[in-house]
Length: 198
Picture (tube, one colour):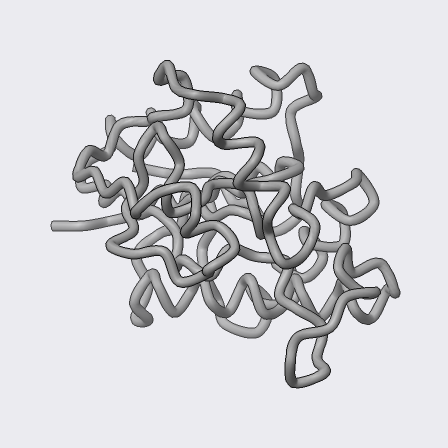
């Protein structure tokens, strides 16, 4: 039985649907980046980040994006965390680990009455509102065809690993907590994170 989720979602422009390392996308929606190849769908749940690939092709595709790729500053990451805290307070989500990195977020979330995809959508929405409220939305100077500010998040719902036993949950928590360290940053401590108890 699923007891928790390791959820990963990215900022706009981080992992494109036609990334040469592979993606979980079935198609490329944007003409700007479709010129660089079809969707590179894979079915693996393991990380593809270190897979050898054509870095120049990936960078050219990113330069063709409609808006600049979002890379959160420390102040923006803090605002995202405050948005998450508001969503947790409102909904009662139980989050056991959280790392907010410049281009992606890792969370370990206990099973909840809402589907994990709804939880991710709620967290993204709350974080976006906080960025807007603080006047630091990374795409605040860009506009969609409808005149609105584009989302700072990837349109994908994110990646989810389903966790069913204590060992899997503890392993995911360790991975999330150590993720900033792998990028040369400090471990993160968030007020809304609660320790996991077997």
